[in-house]
Structure formats: structure tokens, C-alpha cells
Length: 278
Image 1 (cartoon, rainbow, N blue to C red):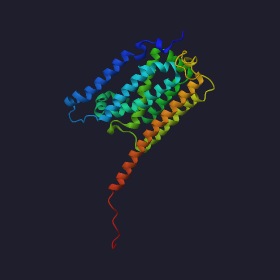
Image 2: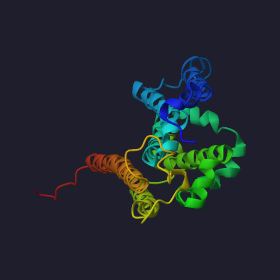
Image 3: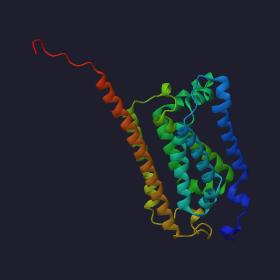
Image 4: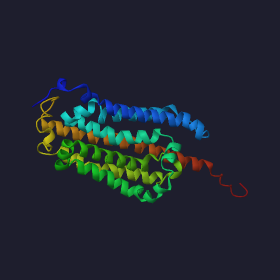
């Protein structure tokens, strides 16, 4: 039976338990950067207003796309679903990594046990792992199964979040002394990410018909703007555009950082002595 938007309950729209979980995460964050830092790490600087804004924005965005109204509408409309995927895995992770101060990351990974898993953070592995899982997710047989099974849905989305953070870690490097790649390699890494996501987007955009049973009937008859194929194509275009804008912005930032450092090094070189007699 088809359901209209007004047929959904408050809990289905707003996922109060998920909201409480995100609120608990934010309380934990403010405790760590406030009372805990003052007591156990007084030498560490308090995060800037911008860093705090990054974390709050990431938490709000993740709640809306994975537990709030956008999550519900994403089950009814493929375009909204792709907006959710773009925000969750292309924007939330770098905001989170940039916003959480370095001392918190050091605290989280201080156990020697993490060193045994250091191989998982090899740049090539994180590059391939996230993009492979993201592309596999958009295969119709996988997509329809995940969308129809809540447990598989949450497991797959949790794995995507972790692997996207692992991939973004290589680029934004929230702990300076844990950096793996020089700026020039980062630029190549960003470019490679864009290339690896392109086939999945192209498959969705240029498909000759609707690919996903979950949206074959126009999102269960609700929230319909386009037919199923147009909805699918628009979703693919939005994913590609968000990816290009986000990677382009990060690429420009990394290039600017590299350019500034190179010219600073040149400026600090001692002047070449003039030939004798001049």
C-alpha cells in the first residue's frame, strides 16, 4: 500500500533515538575539548570556533541524512538519496577530521594495538577500499538488498563511513606528525578519487532504464517530481557535481598550501653572493 508523506509518524520523520545518540556524541566532544582537556591536557590549545563549527555542522548533517527527514525522503526519492550519500561520505568526513583537534585523535588511537592495524591506512588501500565499496553499493542487486534490510543497511553504511574517513584522512591529515603524503602526492590522490567514482556515476546517469527496484514505482508513489528514470539520472548528476565541487575545493586548498610553502622556502634562501669586484 502506498503511503503519503503525511502518513509517516514523528518517530519515522525524526528518529528520536538516533537524535539522542548524536546529542550524546556532541556532549562527549564538548566534554573532551573543555573539562577533560583542562584537567588532563592543559597544554593543548582549545579548538578554534571554526573547528567547532565544522564538528557541529558534520553532526547536524549526518543526523539529517542518516536519521532525520532527509533519510526518510531518501527512501522515497533517489535524488534525495544521492544527496544524502554525497553529504554523508564526501562532506561529513573531512569536516569531522578537520574539526576534531589533534590531541583527541592521539587519545583515541594511543593504544599500541592500533599499530598492528597501521597497514590498513596505506594510501593506496584506503583509496581503493572506499571507492570499491561505494561502487559495489550502487550495483542494483546490492543496492536493493541493502535498502530492503535494515541491519544490512546500517552495517554497510557504517563501513562506508569508516572507509570514507580513512580515505579522507590521507588528504586532510588531522594530526600533523602522522602525515603520509606530500602535497603533490595528495593532489594526485584527490584526482584519482574523482576518476574512481566516475564509473558508478556514469552507470547511473546513462542507464537506459530504472536500475533499482526500490525506486521503480516512483518512491512508493510519494514525493514524485520526475519519473523513475529522470529521478535516477538527476541523482547521479548531483552525486558527480558534489564530488567535483568538493574534490575541486580540496585540490585548490592543497595546491595553495603547497605553493605557499614552496615560495616561503625560496624567500628564506640566503642571497647569492655577487662576483668579486661587482
